[in-house]
Image (cartoon, rainbow, N blue to C red; front, side):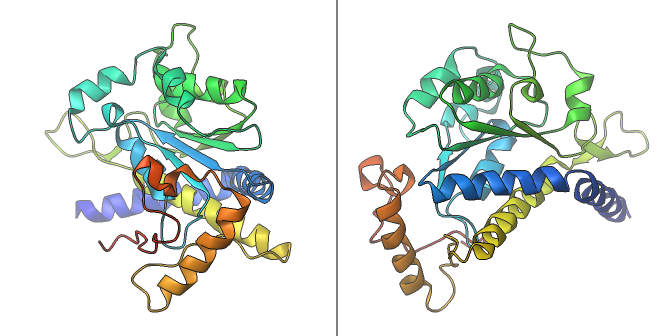
Amino acid sequence: MSYRQYYEAVTKILESVSNEEGESIQQAGQWCVESILQGGLLHVFGTGHSHMLAEEMFFRAGGLLPVNPILESSLMLHIDAPKSSRMERLTGLAEVLIEGQPVKAKDIMFIFSNSGRNAVSIEMALEARKRGLKVIGITSVAHTNAVNSRHPENLKLYDVVDLVIDNHGVSGDAVISLSDLPVKVAATSSVIGTFIVQAIVAEVATGFIKLGVQPPIIMSGNLDGSKEFNEKLFASYRDQVGELRMLSSSHGYASLEGASTVRDGDE
């Protein structure tokens, strides 16, 4: 019953994250509240499979509206997976990528990297901090400690961010050992990373409510009444943050007026 092994492993890690990373998750949420209330954006970035966590925060049912995903195709897996592994080690690329983004000093940058060793993620953190952003890194400290840095200055992600949230994964990510198989199976960074992301969203929404302010949370496009709810949210938020690149038709996304279909995992 390998699925039970995986369930037990994930449950144990979730409990560990809840017990040991709760303060950091709350801190991340507070920073996001402060940023959004100032008209800031939450920028999200990851390479390889970690880009899924950036997508998890973007335009999501029950998620936050002011999220700008930095999704570079060459760093993702759907076109050329081996090439993406080489690209994430490339120095200088992060500077090129961030230059095309609407970043401001009052914004927050989330960087997802399980290994925390590759140049692009490390340099994205450095570039963001250079521009005055607070940077939050979601990573596996155990994995990072087990490998060498691929950055020319021997830096790792946890060295260059303002806040580290450890996903408590093991070195190599996979957790299940099977007889006669020399490698483990069933990775945990995606499911634990998703928990961390959504826990932060919950903290942000709670922070807004405590201040008596309606949080900019998107309703699922598959619920009745969502079109009206979301159009009102988009219209009001456009006035606060006019440069929402993710919803600007000039950048290939739907306009705010017409963007009422929201991802909820059921498309």
